[in-house]
Length: 217
Image (cartoon, rainbow, N blue to C red; front, top):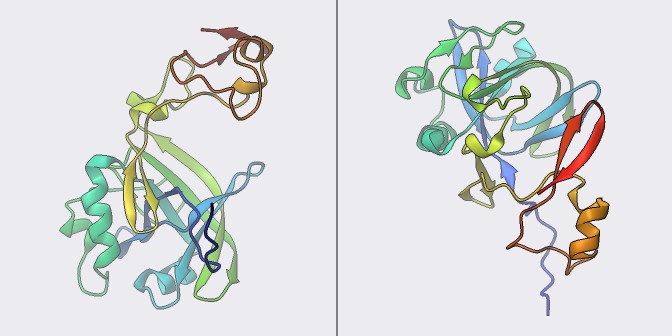
């Protein structure tokens, strides 16, 4: 039995990130959960910001920002930055964050964040309570300790945080890789459909072998 609720923004989980704006001389950090990917090629993302937020006018003025990923160790600082206004405090100084110059945008990166995405706004859409800032991803900076032998990000090591309707939750448990349930060996052993998942069994991963993917357990 399901209960019907009124239409609401209950989509979850969502990433919760710290967005840095401005310049090294005048910068701010805004905590954002209304963010995500809108296009793969070219790489494009969005953040949605209320007009009354202090960072809104800065974003409008510069058209640039950095998305700084939040880990469990940075969660308290991330939450604080979402409550206090940059009109009253310097959040970089208050949180003892290090301003790290970006390569392509004027906004500083948060050095303590393990992943930073430099973004350049190409459009702003008024949607109601929020304006959506659509942006090209110009560069991504990743802590080398998160990279595996193939140079890809191992998110299980990142201890990133997600947001679910006012609450924060940890991520990191690896469950599988995109496409695992369509592989022949997996189907032969576990079947297909809603009852196919076998939580006690090792999940199928694909290994890139010169373009040929092989299944290993």
